[in-house]
Image (cartoon, rainbow, N blue to C red; front, side, top):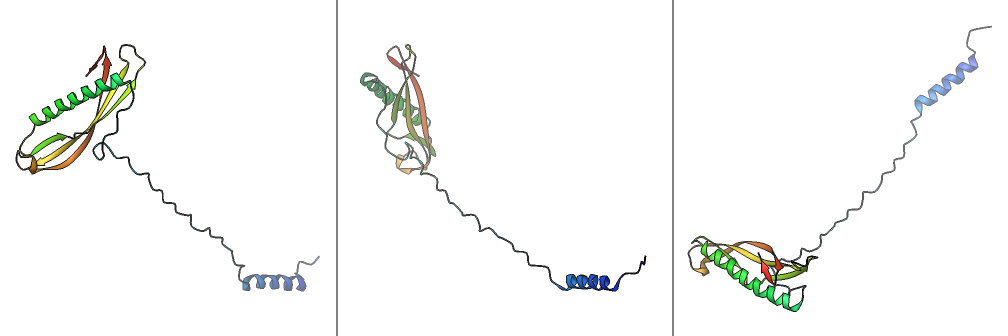
Amino acid sequence: MSTRPRPLVLALAFAALSACESAPPPPVERVVAPPAATTIVTPPPAELTICQRDAKPTSGGDAVTVASFEEFSRGWVKKMRDVANAKASATARTTIRNSFEMELRPTNSAQAPYVGVLTYCEIGNSCTSLAPHTCTARTSTVVKEMFRYQAGKWVY
């Protein structure tokens, strides 16, 4: 057997090799996904606080308990105003808005059948003198205080 390559086989091999070298590779088709849709999520508007709106009506409880909590709350806010006035200086003072909110929440206790939630607004002021007209509101803070109704009276 002859180990010499046959001319026809060599010719075909060279033809195939030259065809591969000269022909450009087939184009690669790329599929590009469209950009993802941008969704802008707008948060719901923030609920206004007692510092930014009028007070809501008292909620929860029977008429007698509501009336007693309203009376107690007026007295409590007056005490807080008195404390704030005692701490007032020529440059800083805290005031409490006139409107406040009250909520009565029932409990499962016979000894303390209700918890009262009092919400009011403290305003921090910067002042140039002791005169109230020289003050400018700088901060506002929502204050929530809880009291229990025990033995027919509100306890703090």
